[in-house]
Amino acid sequence: EAQVTQNPRYLITVTGKKLTVTCSQNMNHEYMSWYRQDPGLGLRQIYYSMNVEVTDKGDVPEGYKVSRKEKRNFPLILESPSPNQTSLYFCASSLTRGLGNTIYFGEGSWLTVV
Amino acid sequence: AQKITQTQPGMFVQEKEAVTLDCTYDTSDQSYGLFWYKQPSSGEMIFLIYQGSYDEQNATEGRYSLNFQKARKSANLVISASQLGDSAMYFCAMREGNSGTYKYIFGTGTRLKVLA
Image (cartoon, rainbow over all chains, first blue to last red; front, top):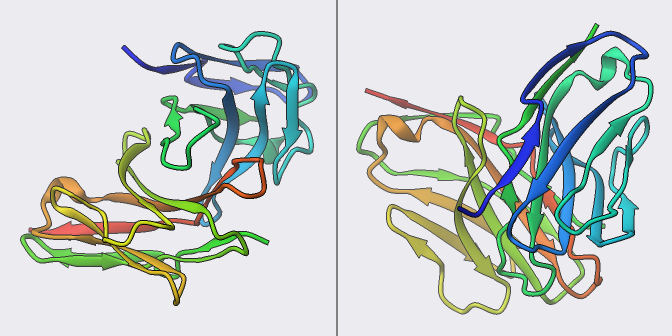
């Protein structure tokens, strides 16, 4: 089954404690991306990757890091989480070519930083 | 700069009636794609419908249709015969092609409530 898997789904952590949200897709997609969703702001892109070892900042990259060492994985790293990073996070993937290729989303990760 | 605008934070519709969710976009590219996604209260994102900038006919998928008006840069979602299960958040999104980055951008969403 084609899917994007992200973990953990739910996490409560403390300010400053480094955490990683993993993301893996099994569709051989080149394009992967992280979004955060906040009330009234919709989905905002954090980072995206066009292929292995190719990453670029989205609209809200501050406080986050990513890496793309393998095509299937695109982890999101919060080196020193702060309460304003409390949000719902989505990993997503898509084929790079073809405008009509929809983006596939993971189930979301609810992150609370206290 | 590319931008998606959804001006309706919330909408109500009576069951079995049709409803239109507004979406306007801004882009300087000639080649782009427009998408609508549904997000139920459980949180997952569900793809509904796609319209390409060069498509001459409006896209339809079952009860969903996309009212594409290129000159006005609008891509409204029409849901016919609303059902209680249509209550959800709806996001409009765009993907540009000419820029080479193939980024997707999303609007702020419209929360639809279907009334029995």
